[in-house]
Image (tube, rainbow, N blue to C red; front, side, top):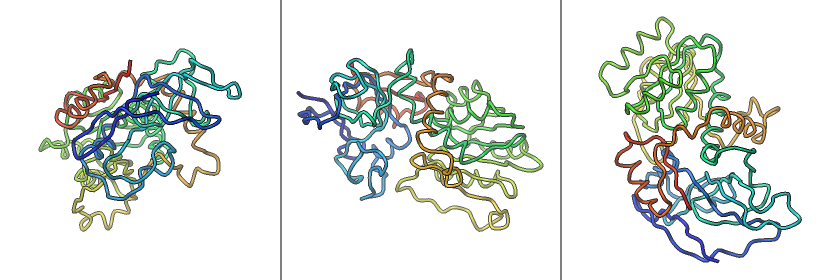
Amino acid sequence: MRRTALYFVNSRQVELREEDLPQGQPGQVLVQTVVSAISAGTELLIYRGEFPADLPVDLTIKALEGTLEFPLKYGYASVGRVLEAGSDVALRDGDFVFAFHPHESHFWAYPEDLHVLPPGMDPLDAVLLPSMETAVNFLQDGAPLVGEQVVIFGQGTVGLLTTALLARLPLKRLVTFDSFALRREKARRFGASVCLDPVAPASLVQAQGKLQPFGADLVYELSGRPEALDQALALTGFGGRVVLGSWYGAKRHAFDLGGSFHRSRIRLLSSQVSTIDPALSGRWTKARRLAVAWRLAMDLKPSQLVTHRLPFQKAAEAYRLLDEQPEKAIQVVLDYY
């Protein structure tokens, strides 16, 4: 049997390769992909070649092995249909499942690495499960309190889902920043109090005015722009928290830590969804957090963030769109059939 797989082969170059589907191992099931989602954050770093050399691809996802170097299979959000399931597994032929798996038309997986879609769930909502889980992780790491002022830099898919969750809380104010009008409008619809352009000359001053007299209690930097961290620190009040959810890859920036930061007692927290905050790990597991993300995905319908659905055969066009015209897109997905 043959399959089609997407490879990152060089900077700003992807290609689809036809290859033999390897033989499955005992206990595995065969999955035919229906739809996969492109991460406009991490995957664009890979696409642009802006990743640290020789870093492991991922230490927690079995389907992502090896190191970050071209050629490379990457991706971690696929929904497919079970084609072959043995009689000794709980899955059945025809079941729709989610998998943390790269972009390819068919793959083998162990049942414990697959997540059966709840009855009636749209595959387009399910395929954004990783983004939903990341948003849940950001709230757990930031631990927003009643009446706090919260700021988010970056309103891509993950940023918008984080906005949607925060807007459900009794905050005093929720301020968002994004360079693109399409995303600012979506943030407004999701419940943000103020939606600003981070590169507009007066936006930072405007935000500082809104956050007086205490400044922001909690700021999320989710934009992928290293310079946004300086803006985040400038808006954070004394003793506030800054959650750094962006992965900058190989990007470098001279951060402004020589001024008020030294006396501000600001806490800078790194946040990444592959692990649980150690302060919560006595009660929380990844499985428990993922179950919360499933419920929220069914409720929030993250598929509303999908702006483009392209055939898998046009994957190169999808990446060019996100790279060259990001103002036109929020979430791009690939359809396989």
